[in-house]
Image (cartoon, rainbow, N blue to C red; front, side, top):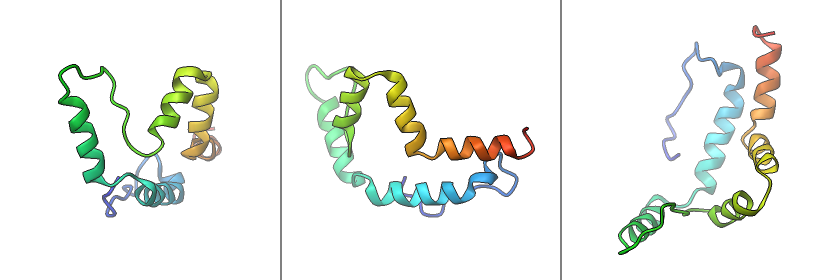
Length: 99
């Protein structure tokens, strides 16, 4: 995500995790594959005479492919759930008005 102006509306369902959203948005921008690099890679893969049904590109795409192909989907989901702060969000959301 390269849009540094992205914010959550005041009445957002996710307002209880505004700080997590801002942190993740900034971290994702800092760690992301540059847009032009990503675009060149995706275009070159899709323009092949026999392109793959799936395109794996970008930072950590090989690791994600490896985990999703050979690992347990439960372990993979758990890792992603924690990486993106959804474990914290779930706790906050449940302890707010949704209990």
